[in-house]
Length: 85
Image 1 (tube, one colour):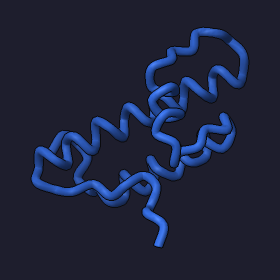
Image 2 (image 1 turned 135 degrees about the vertical axis):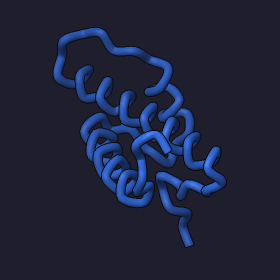
Image 3 (image 1 turned 180 degrees about the vertical axis):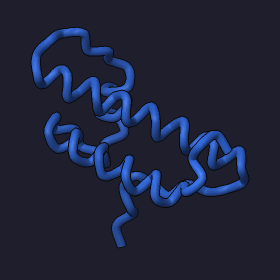
Image 4 (image 1 turned 90 degrees about the vertical axis):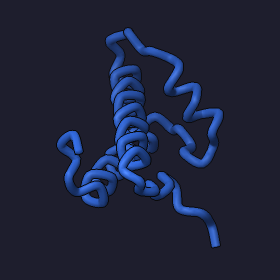
């Protein structure tokens, strides 16, 4: 492992931050298109809203890296948004 020894705790913390910034940026995490747009659009403006969106982008990238590491370890990462019952 590359430093993420407690995947469940790391994911919970990361997901909490992702949900916070998604709410600030009004990004619907259930909408794959909105997530992809956030990942593909690099913000380089100094506006506070752009900084929040760039933080969200970085957190999403970090989650993808963590998921990739988990899969390489034979673990199944939980979804960012739990499925509706």
